[in-house]
Structures are given as structure tokens and as C-alpha cells.
Length: 116
Length: 111
Image 1 (tube, rainbow over the protein chains, first blue to last red):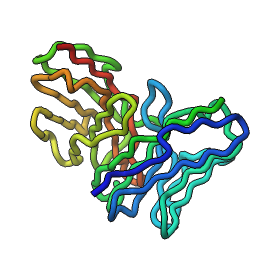
Image 2: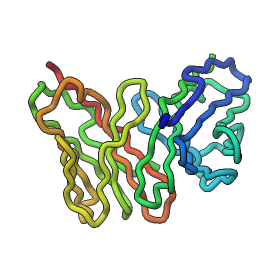
Image 3: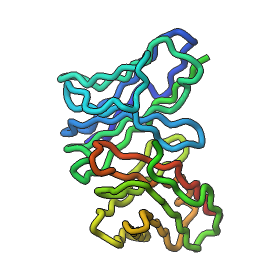
């Protein structure tokens, strides 16, 4: 049973370009969470999705950021017109029934986004 | 907003010693979880303690929870160099649907 798969592992973009980060949750997991981590910082919640639905996007900037988890395929975190401040490690996590059911999260290895 | 706050920020010990990390939080919770992160990697779940539990053990790990003080501690006994990592507490806040993480404690275990 493969773990949470994130790609790419490293992504370099120039200011103004778009960044697309992909996350395939563990098999059987329908709950996906995206977090951002800056150096020497903890993880900041961005968005929580279930298949085809955004459950909670309270941690995601209103501008330039969007997320989806389609019926088929991976979850995508999209950042449009990237700026240097978007440089960070982005982690995806999944769980079978969601953390509201006292479940733990399974994390991917993250995507390190660098904006030049 | 930051819910859990770990203390200390960094801890350096020798192999064989015990390591204790603390976590404080602000609101009522359903459960509190501890995770470990090796440099450049994703987080790995260590242990979950529910709000109605006071202590839990898993191998060399011991977690306590004091809901009256809104605090938890993680004890790693007989530490090894391989325990070197950052350790984060995370709370499942009542009424919220996500885990909120602290800034972590960086543990360095020297051989």
C-alpha cells in the first residue's frame, strides 16, 4: 500500500508563473489536507478537501491560491502568479475518515517550491 | 492561529538520556497528537491521546495530557541518535475539522 505521493519533489518557478502541486492520497483515503511550512516554522493549515468538495479553505489566501480534489485523479494545489513569499514546503496529508473522527494524518514527503 | 506551542524550541542531549518536550494549547480539544519530522521529510504520526485520557505509552514514548492546564508532554526514554528530528504536537480542536500544529521542538541526540 503506497503512502501519500506528492510530486514534484522540488519545483522552481519564476515570479509570475503558475505552480501546480499534486497529491495522491493513500488508497482508501478520501480526506485530503494541504499544509505549508516555512523554515523553522510549524505547519500552517491551508485547505481540507473531500472527494469533489472543499470542506474548509480558511487557511488558504483568497487570491491566487486554489485547490481541488476531483472524483478521479490526484488533489491539485494551484498557485497562480507566484511571488517570492510563496517559497515554502507544501505538504499533503490524508486520512480515511477525517481528523474529526480522532484519526491521524498520513503525510507525503512534500513539494519544495522555490520562486526565483 | 497557532494552537499548540512546544517547549523547548531546541533540545540537545546525549544518547541514553531521556528527552522531554512540552506542548501547551489554548482551546478545548478532542485529541492531541504528536508527530515527528526528519529534516526535509514529511511528518510521521507517533501517538494520539484523547481528551479523556491522561497518559499513554508506545514503546519508548510516553505522552501525558492535562486538560485542566491545557498541556501535554512527550517523553522519549533511552534516546538514540536516530531520534534526532523535530517533534510537533497537533490538536484536533473541538468544532474544527483540521489539526493545528505547533512550531515544534528540534531534538538533537549526540552519540
